Amino acid sequence: MKLIKPSKINGSVEARPSKSLMQRAVAASMLAEGISAIRNPSFCDDSLAALGIAKKFGAKINKTPKKVEIRGINIKENLTSEKLRLDCQESGLCVRMFSPIAALFDKEIIITGKGSLLSRPVGMIEKPLTLLGATKCIAKNGFPPIEIKGPIKGGNIGVDGSISSQFLTGLLMALPLCENDSEIAISNLKSKPYVNMTIRVLNKFGIKVNADKNLEEIRVAGNQKYKPCEFEIENDWSSAAFLLVAGAIAGKVELKGLNKDSEQADRSILAALKCAGALLEIKKNSVVVEKNNLQAFEFDISNCPDLFPALAVLACNCRGKSKIMGIERLRHKESNRAFILAQELKKMGAKINVFENHAEIKQSGMHFAKADSHNDHRIAMACSIAGLTSENGVRIIGEKCISKSYPEFFDDLKKIGADVL
Image (cartoon, rainbow, N blue to C red; front, side, top):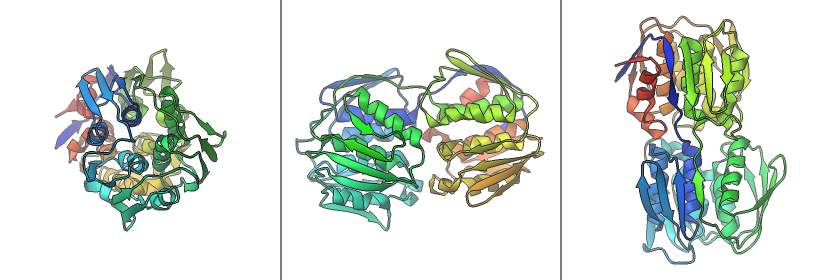
């Protein structure tokens, strides 16, 4: 357990590398024949899961603290195992992204994981991969593990993006290597910035896709080849959001190494902080946030659902009643995130009500409580930040789950002035 006491925040810290970009870069490097170098790598649990899968596929990996070199594979060559088992740990992106990639092979492959991943929906992948030519694609009642056997050939399919854009990312990774051209008709797509992120990674590795402006139709030519390259991982706005909110509610913080022009969806935290009245200074290579007279705000997180936990804590510290919209997909995260976070924040005195697609949060006088992470990294970090302005702090139960995305979180929290025991 960790105890976070009421604290005045005042300090600066380097933002951490993006696990979303890291996992995509690992997959692309694995599919490129030759050696790619990933600089500023992320080594959180989800990133390590992606590296482990690449290794299982036959990629050669050399890790140093500042660089990962990956020698990619030739998908035309047979895999060494008759039945390959890929362990995604608890990474939702891994299970949905590597499923279409696994379907490139004329081998039976089982994709599985552990813990909360086994309750993440993956049924949306079965029909599209079968239509593309997979001879087997079966999920266990719509959840992992998934049994897949290819090879997919390409073709025309429809994809529903209402639950997650991660399967679309996997398709965009796999379809360029199919023998036929493909066309994807996309409906109800959420988290569009993540799809644009995927396309940017593909372009860096020499893969071209043609997408319309609204990402409703994407054409992918077959018989393309990934080209090895050097890829720099941007620092992560998702994890930075918690420390930026810490500065907004409890003092002042500077996050270094953030790209203000990033395509990452969670860069939207800046807009939310501005709406709430926090003092912002956006420099060339850093962001400074300082506490101010915070006011209630309204914000739609349809394209950036991972911001909800940090924004919920921000709202608890804003005068009036805030409203956060677009929360319906949070039930499919590591936990039923919106409802569980509300449950834990209420233990601390939060005035929060969660509805089907929005949450209403009033300014709250927070007090000491024991908050359970429910093995959800973002709940652990959100409750920790909430403890900074609580009357007697907060004790976090199950705090080790932060290693999924941000192993250094408590160390960085100390660096900016938090009293963490």
